[in-house]
Image (cartoon, rainbow, N blue to C red; front, side, top):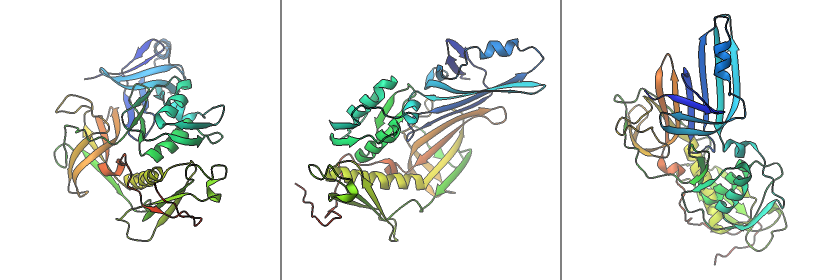
Length: 362
């Protein structure tokens, strides 16, 4: 059986009795929570030997066997004890957690004529984080402003929405710009065969009939707030929402008609993804057909008559868990592949701008 090994400060720690390692296609950083308990017999020497090097803030890695899942830092060291046992719990996240927590400090506070990839590299470099690009990031932004106190994650996510891409990580502490994949997961999830437990959530409260994106157009009105000037308005519809439920989103950045349309499609697909999810618990951490760990961003066929799912689904979140009671389990969260798929090129439904000035696409 693969060992779960935490490496920090030159030491390797194993023998963990409780394990939770989480990775998500829509999260910028993976997380881990490891716990170990042993009998306390009045001698703390073994305890002190074990915790030597487990310093919060230390660089660390987490491996399952030979597979790297986390490259980052220790966040929390949580010791506890009673008259019989000592328990040690440690938590941490990928290096990209610094992008989630920390503000963007940029002297001018703005970027001009740069692509999402170029901006992501500039923002990530001070944190020692490299950027991996797996997709077309679209055209350069004419001008984007960093809001005071805005975190790197908030800023980059705001731009990613306008290009219809996802920001995640890869277990190596790198920021990854990607899209929903069409790669197959080489396993099928079937009720009564390999699904140990399942849970779904199907909702309509987060979805709207129309997503109306309003933004300042290129070359004019740039010096005023977008609420006070004319510009571009792109409308994206969700045809499965029959009631009249419009949502107006004001895009703070100067953008194009295609950029506004991509933002609208991103908002629609994100709402669909958040509204219709299922998670399945399986025994073991590795795909029995390949011997590899289950991977994010893979298409798997799901047959589940209880949840009325009989189609290909996309793995959007993976939780590796282990304890003495349940053994090793994996929880795969799946969504409809189309719910995270925003086309690289947008079909734009343009309307005149909301101040009454017609916009004519070239």
